[in-house]
Length: 308
Length: 281
Image (tube, rainbow over all chains, first blue to last red):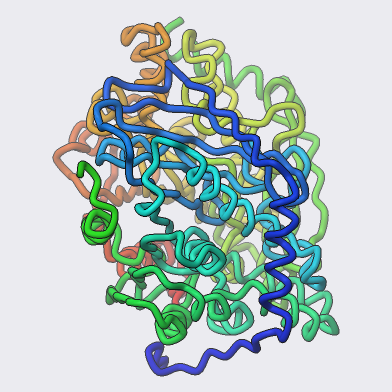
């Protein structure tokens, strides 16, 4: 019988973890962001203005996003970056702007509209160059979300002290990494069913995708297991967690077959910031949806104060 | 063109185009439990679409399940639990990843692509892709023809209706059902695409006319198998349930662990295989 709350999930911290990510951020900084916002009148409503966004990220790649702002709210606005799940495309986040946020739904590299140069596919992203942390597919993907926050920091209509992150599954995992890479910038994080935490443990607890991709990779490359472990340690949310300073809401389904609850509890233990964990019995990867969205909305509103 | 003629024309086009299926073994996904293949097959257009096919180890015939594609660029690979029990085929329709040579669907955008005319609506081709997949799956010698299921959203309803003989139909989502009403309930995608399209100058009558060809309530009366509707608002779905010949309703709890297990067990019982939970206890 599993005991998720007390299970041991361990990840070795690479000795050059900080230097590795500093180098990635330095690469990003070597390129001007060059954000281009194009208003989309037919996608806009009487309540929300929609923009197509393009900006430059790690390696010089152009990355897409959707940016939405409420029509009738005066600047400066609180802002929310919404981060997509593994197989989902970012939708236009009108619903968040209807609540008073400027919202940026980022499409990291490999997602549609950002996949001209890098397109590992789904399945594929999780194991793309997984034997080499320097070229692992997720490196740029993680940094694309960081750059999305930097796009917001450049905007005069945004209150830089009220920027939050929201996402579930991959979006939850990258909320943690982004907050860790931008300490002091992110005001709060709402992370559901966080993926990419305990990356080598998770495939031993489930046969569901995407973690099953790692099992498949090792099925035909069994000798690579140490190199895989070494690579993903640089990307594991458990290693980012101690660097997160922003108040964080976690929500976890106790029967989650996609992101095992053991990894969610491990993330909670690794976080040293103000953390709230909501657990949902009998719930799988939805982790309490749809009811939990009210909790998420209240948490974000408490910290980001839309409509103020 | 009336409803029957519209769909007869799709059938005629499919019948005139050989599928020319090609299966390629995928060693990484092949285990002691099942053998895994990628499938390329021609649908109307002509257009090559993609599928994931898995066949259990051992002597068949086996029960089978067709997983129709969801709304989105990616469909999950069939779960190992399903691969161990069923011949399972999951389809990537035209424009989805792995079936996007020549046409990559946009999200948002796909739901209204060509919607100005039923003849040009993208879902005419997508429906044909599902029908082609159904024909392929049911033609496999490893498949027990008396235990073939289809699972998914409205496309599962449409497929079961257009290709009678599916013993079980598991409907876990609805996209086209009362879409012109549902679009007014929120600004959430994908139905918000309909509102976007109207803002761009289209008329509600035009959209409603095209969508009516895909209304599951118009297709459902032709289903011959047992149909399970997993829904959270039975009243809203009343006009669909009432016209479906042999139905069961599961009121989803939104405790998705519980719901997933129920849906698995329902099909397992119908198919004569053991129920399995994706969550390993």
